[in-house]
Image 1 (cartoon, rainbow, N blue to C red):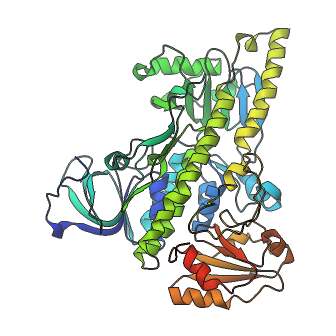
Image 2 (image 1 turned 120 degrees about the vertical axis):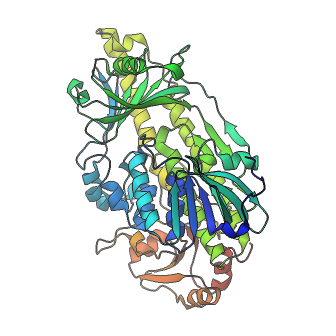
Image 3 (image 1 turned 180 degrees about the vertical axis):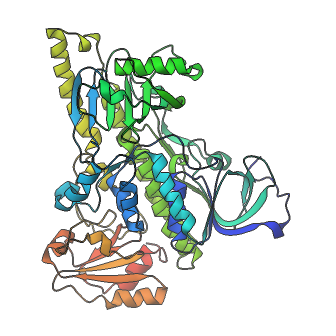
Length: 564
């Protein structure tokens, strides 16, 4: 149906909610959690019968884990996926049962809990990354979303139509399996409904960026198989890993362990002239054997195709009271695992802003900052994903790579050097993970301090407004981030921090939920390079300074009540 089709149901039957969310992937579910914890009414609909069956995304970056920690369930996420002692290495082979070319070793889930407390510099963080398939993440997000009294989650329901009348959004939702439709009246609609977003299409929002990028690997059509192969480990000649990458002239592929035991997500690049849309299970077994270099019994759980080579960002993220987020707003080639993680931060950014409007704490103009902040970040992150894909996908694997000869040994040594460098480019990315910034946002009070360069593999902590707050572990073993309030936090740092009463008074007057956290440690004062720092609900530095004299104006600006 068209987006503005008239309703056929009487108004009295309409469901009333604050935010209607189309899409039950990580972005939609995270948004339901952000709204639900704030008591905002939301209704999430997704045409699928439940959360994802296929593994999909396989890496949760450290910043995303910090947000899960903020919501109280990072430990649940880390307990899922791979067993706690399973390697999380990324290893490159000519074929999985043949020569190993390169490997980057990363902490296991058990090691990450211990090591994070001793890490400094680029990797000073409350959480380290976690290797877990998206299907498990969605289950946890759904369970928590459904626990909030103000959040309703309906899988097996699709969005049929919507219309924004300027004061609210009217929509029709319908059971996917058939049945009576229901009308919904919402204050806002968020389309987190994936790459083929119905919401984006109905709004007529076009893509910007590039697509159709061709590479030998990670460019063009890919063939995906979700499979069980308990005997795979027995054919390995080298230590097991989390991700296995096959680099040879016949079949480029990668495979991630889903459960650390027998299930894997296998993805193979197609050669020119191949059409995998009609492939059978016999074809899947043949292609898998090409990557392994040996016959391994396998059970096919699902199979299909997908397209790599995207670096797309929607030209707009908002139209009136309707927003798009996640894959509806940006499409990545999955190198670096940035698509899912960027989608989660879309929800984190939009959640507190929608809640502020619904609760009457800010004018609707606050929502203009969503596109202003998230669109540049999406462009940045799609650019990094494209760079990673070029690095691995444009590498030419020559036939002699597999030769049992001096020439073959030399070719493998050359490939090893290249892939070792690439692995560190793509998989050791604190700069990408922590370095995203909202410079230029109407909600940020910039201080003009020089910023460190935006580099993928290096992150220099800075409290300059617009970015993630610098992290530290306190003397009592707690993470600084654990002291942040769920809404607004004013850090008063150092033994002689100035009075914070003007901020407290301004917060009371405006209805802003603010907590002052006093920490006398001189090291924290030095880390933030100022005695006062104002932290947003999404854990972004909004302002820092040396006194609270301008508190009323600062608070009005960062909460969207006063334009800059």
